[in-house]
Image 1: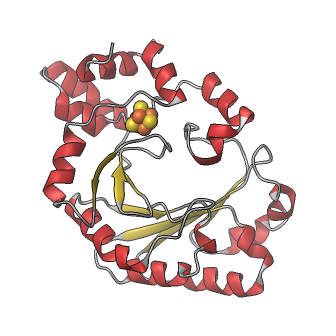
Image 2 (image 1 turned 60 degrees about the vertical axis):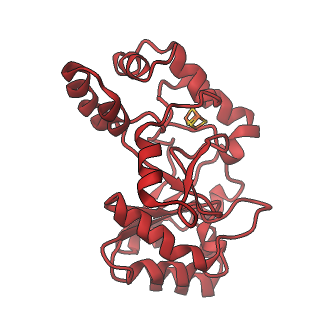
Image 3 (image 1 turned 180 degrees about the vertical axis):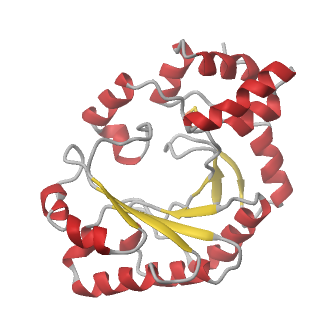
Length: 251
Ligand code: SF4
């Protein structure tokens, strides 16, 4: 769930029941509360409390850890990680992207003392996507150029659904092992996207559309091919990317 982006309004609490319905409908095991920086949302605690008691939804938090400088925010964070259905949190900082890197890293021991919290300050394990601040940042664009990850909208579930042969279907299932699994994102307005790029089109809105309509749009989804990751994917020789292009009809 995309909590906020710089200059955009925060997600409304009214959206939360619709978000929970969507994740229950697709039987997603875990909901990630991210941003922007989710702890800056004025109702961050209420959002976590909602999902703690929404029933059947584990929630995680991805944060840059800058709340550590504020005693009140520390208490809030220590409260939400004790809530039911809290699965874990990742505190991620990186000297290439965060001015607060050194100061946040100085609190590594504190973060690691919190149950369920993982502190990461090394290069991203997951592929860099052409999203948020990455779209205007040369270093991020260079990382995208150097990596060989497919964009997140291409995943094992999508390829399996659209495979026309049993061979392609079988191979598609192995993609999940390469972290190519479905990660739909809901933005502040309730629009569902197949990945987190700022360019990704919506496949429906959790407030306005039937769940089945959104699900069918996800099943039939074709990548828009607008992001930088897609330009790499189009010419990739990785056998799984080649298969995905064939199944999805991408020339
Ligand atoms: S190809 Fe389009 S839908 Fe897929 S990740 Fe890139 S922008 Fe999003």
